[in-house]
Length: 161
Image (cartoon, helix red, strand yellow):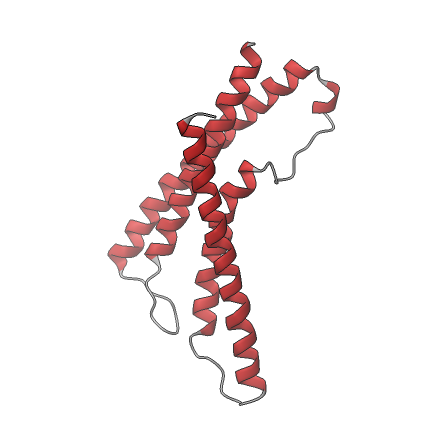
């Protein structure tokens, strides 16, 4: 494993940890809000905004880790009929398409984040800034591009053997 592979794997693991922490936060605040609302009749006013934005953090941070573990649903019924070299070529093609897709997601996320920053948009109830979450989506999309690039390079090595 080279330095690039090691960097990508470590980055994906750290983003995965952040996603886990974010999901724990969502769970704790959700339960606390329910208890405050039902028992004390005093809901947490900022809970909805907070949970919505932190759920974004959880979902976007998890994508590269899931991709690095091949945890996404893969359609294998056609691929199973191909020889081993055909499977690697197909995987390489899918990796390249994924790099293009996630590259576009990253690019558009940064542009959209800039637009939101310029417009001064904030969340509804507590006025939290939204653009950092959109930029985080772009950063995580770049991480997915790196994972797919690493996988594409590994598949290319297998194909050329």
